[in-house]
Length: 178
Picture 1 (cartoon, rainbow, N blue to C red):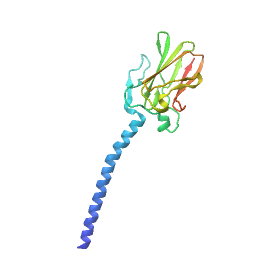
Picture 2: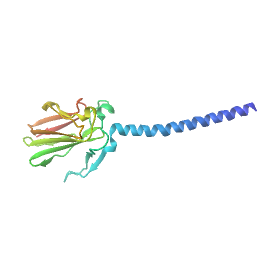
Picture 3: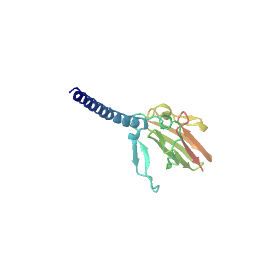
Picture 4: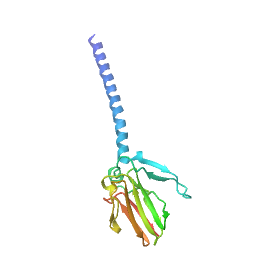
């Protein structure tokens, strides 16, 4: 009889362990998913129609929502930013480059402009930490996105490549003037 009682107690222990494991997984998985979304900002990703003739949709960040942090710093641990080519829009004789914050990156982050024609870069989205302080190191320009937008009138660029980065120089992009 004693032996049967031990088996019953062992079975209850096993059942208790299985239930505990199920509870832990049920709590941990949503916490991991929500934490990852908070770090990468994937909930802010929206695809909008492409400019006429470009053939592919353009990523645009929602200017609303929780501030994003630099994915290059916090998730990719210093890895270079992926390339996200962008379109240039001509508005009243000024080449306008619209850069959003999507998934903790500047998107798009690669542009080609015509040298000698004024350029304006508009960063849109809410960011914190280094991502919220875009800068053009070669031009000595720094911005602040805590209000949801930072605008950089660059003027007429000489032929060459101009880099923009987060304030730590990790999350990056470039403008090539030809």
